[in-house]
Image (cartoon, rainbow over all chains, first blue to last red; front, side, top):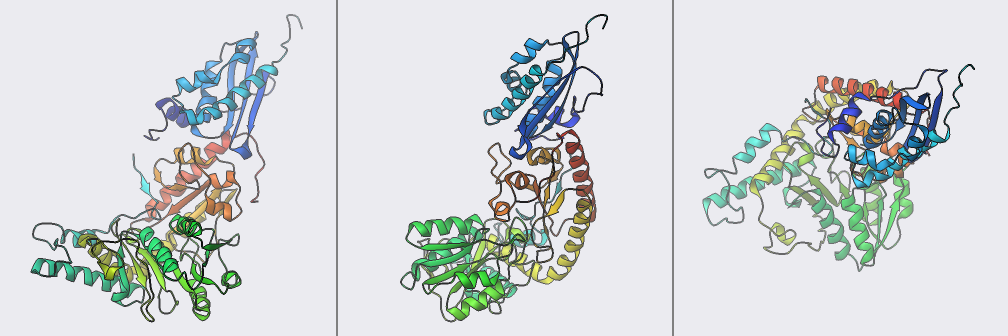
Length: 131
Length: 392
């Protein structure tokens, strides 16, 4: 897609393929969260399908720079299998390192972190056995 | 990866015919000598090249060859015009008029002049990017010594009515400086007809080389300028420094070709621009910036709502195009030109400038249109739902 050195290989791959970009189907137990403002140039929304108290799969929608979009995509993979506490504690620095994000873009990753933690606050109550 | 070049407003490829002329001035058998060394034959041949180029540049803009002062480009020409005229005429007044959408070569010079005690009025163009002559007229004061207005706006491509402004300035005894870096060679301009006292030109926007330009200076009555460079006294003392014969000859050839082919180029490029705009216009939420018809043929500035600009540029890596940011780096600032037109920061950052040139083909335009449509739709599909925002 591009050989622009401002973006690492993983950012370029995720911008090309956009893995995890979509919405979950209706009717699944979902932890949803969002942060940022399109008018300010950055907005991220997550939907995590929760099964047995853990993230079974994640989906994102994003408006922002390539680093932000790639980080949102990366999070949907990273948090698969995580419980609520792990999701709530997720830290943006992980994505910064994995995606070789330059310091000037760290603020964008805070938006991703805010959206993740918002989803943790909206953790669904799954139906118990026999319900 | 194939990359289609649509950034001709930034710079153009040098026309092979210009390259040929330049090469004739470079090698050991060429006309490489110092054109000031007229005491020997090689120097005189170089001088002849320079004077031929001077005549070619003058012819394109309705000037006499003796009015052309070579510079390193339009930025230096703008600096010489503004500092040279303001400092020479400061006893007559210390007020200047310009617009908010001028090139930084003008705006930054004006700010420096403010630090030197001048006052500058910065006119706000209409939402279409046009500065009305009546605005200029209203801004003139008894102590106004100079108006600076660009011919073609480099980001949005609108054409200012410099002739009307020139006539009213002439009637009021005020000097008019016009930066025609984006206009000369693409649109007719005539310093006599348009009453332009100082005209800044560059070669590299019209398929000439980078690093050379000119300032056309009114001679009758003679216009005084204070130089900004001192040294060997070349160019009648207005611009010291050894002339780069190959660059100057290249500019002359580029302007000669532009003069010969202007009409045909304009017709062909306008058709390509309309083809491109027709494809982009079909995308919901895409708007053209600047006046619809009062524009140069090769520049199209489009704002794409609902897509973040940096991501769109990243996705369009197979197109060499410009964005509505000052730069595409991490510290990108929205364009002051687009802001002056009333665009929000977000819309300014979602703006693309596509600029066509002599070597742009129909296939290039069709490829670009297809790629832009594809990527806009792809990025919008992953964006959170947000209301389309009108211009502020």
